[in-house]
Length: 303
Image 1 (cartoon, rainbow, N blue to C red):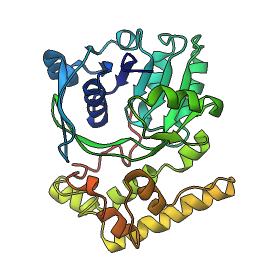
Image 2: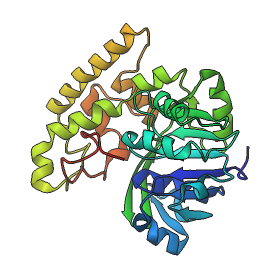
Image 3: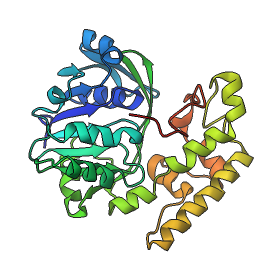
């Protein structure tokens, strides 16, 4: 495929805005959807998103072909549908998209989190989706990113390698080939069981939020989440939790990556322990903590 590939990005949060802007800057035709019109009003008025990166390599105005709160408009005549919303909303999007999907389209969950592709496919089946589509999931989100304003996005780091798997796994290479012109960083994730059980967000996000509860509430999240929030003691708790995840995967016959191995794969950083490796990850610098404990990192929120 080439830059003539048409994309729909579903979700205009931190990640969706970064992805939509970056794809547009790479020359792809991009539709951006968000269910709440007010959230994308500024983007729609400007017809695009200003993108900056921490290292200065990505810079410019990503002009979008369509900005809409009409899901049918967003999905019409696109090749690849990038779902960039909290995993708690995947089932609702699947339900709404089921009658709108078209033969040959690829749906990619960014990320799938734990068994997200299986859940998404089941919801399509429950809605009697007639279209022949391929569902795939990324192991983690390819960007470390935040929104700088209503029509602005900042990318702190693009991950070096991100495993991806399709359902069924026999379709993985076709999805990788379709995505490669935009995202050569995606690699074969073997199966959705592997991408699901290598869900590092399940270790880093809720545990780090709970261990920083006092600081989040006293500062409203005004500190660097991964840098100031991760201390040697906090990192040791993360390591213990991570060993449990790896052990569960092993019981199912799957060799899961440790957190240290994941950081090396995703960001090409190493360390003598998890605390050192996290602090060696330049993309974590500048990322603020959640402003409240009422956050998707620890809650299953309604879509």
